Length: 211
Ligand SMILES: CC(C)(COP(=O)(O)OP(=O)(O)OC[C@H]1O[C@@H](n2cnc3c(N)ncnc32)[C@H](O)[C@@H]1OP(=O)(O)O)[C@@H](O)C(=O)NCCC(=O)NCCS
Image (cartoon, rainbow, N blue to C red; front, side, top):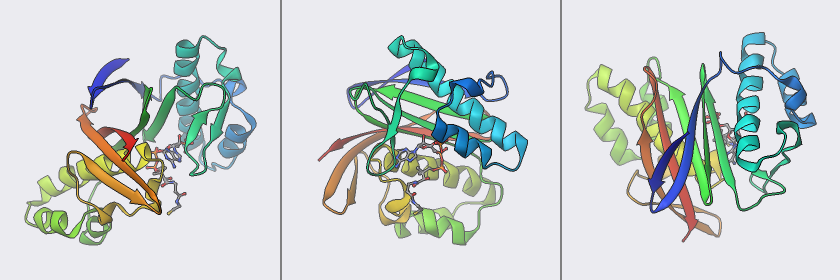
């Protein structure tokens, strides 16, 4: 676990190598089992199971409860929460061989992405605000790949901290410090930072508070 202080709030962050996480199917709840069954490719299913085992292992240590007894529920946006410990917030992200898990006493979001292989302008325009898109187009191809993945992880971590996920278009706002995210009548102020990620990955962390 790595402790990060963001906007004065302490967040514990853990990287997980999904290939090294023991697959404990007996730790998963019915919803996790059902989702795992839907994967056709076994390597993708194993990574999903590994990510959820890692989450339960880390929450188990924090809460001093057996991993299979951790009660994970979803809020009205579908963001996973702890049914029996509402004060402890967490968030999970997984991409290819790695998962990223954050724990905090504030709404938290994380995102890890493998570097986008060959980013198209169509994809970039879905992720970036028009001002960001204009700047991105001026970069050379090698910079474009890294930059778009970094911006994508920053925006997705922010949207996950706010719990809206992609109900809010990442292209609808610019990355700023802090960022303001609005959805219907709800407004959040979001602080964020990049995280040092394994080679060929980018990652970001965000915390959100009602504004
Ligand atoms: C949450 C979301 C951003 C995930 O993006 P992703 O890059 O595919 O996946 P990540 O690995 O980074 O994150 C997935 C994890 O985020 C968590 N998560 C799910 N919904 C979340 C939400 N609303 N807010 C924060 N975290 C959420 C879960 O732990 C999930 O893990 P799981 O799928 O293994 O259960 C995306 O699925 C989303 O926006 N969902 C909510 C809105 C929605 O369903 N929209 C439909 C399309 S518009």
